[in-house]
Length: 160
Figure 1: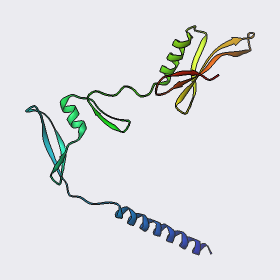
Figure 2: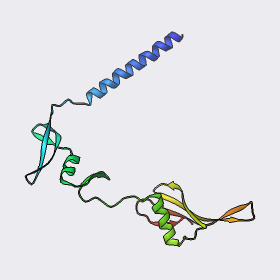
Figure 3: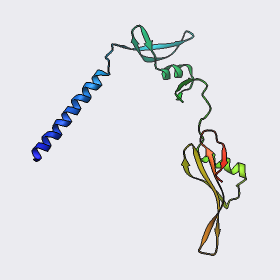
Figure 4: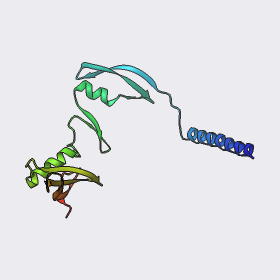
């Protein structure tokens, strides 16, 4: 019985590997390209060189090599390629969320704690509170408020 199960398992594995390989091969295409180290000139001045690909009469140059040669920043953000001027920061950090809540509500006293407790969807959940000592050994927290801070826009809204 164990031999039949082993045989079945091995057969399924081999069949899966062959089927997966055939499916992968059916979705790929082999192309002929020429790879060449080519000098990059801007306004007739040689700036750098880069490995380029030539395929069907078109030469493809890595954008990072071009941007570095012309002294411009390059980035991929929000599904777009930016060369030169970059879009504004699209998200704020946890520390920035805390600063925004402190500034809006004036929570600057050293005994007031303002912390990001967790993330909920597109929002930081920020807790503002104070630790109050009841006696020498016990204490409790006094909450000033709970706030949502949108991670993209920085907009603050009270949870309650």
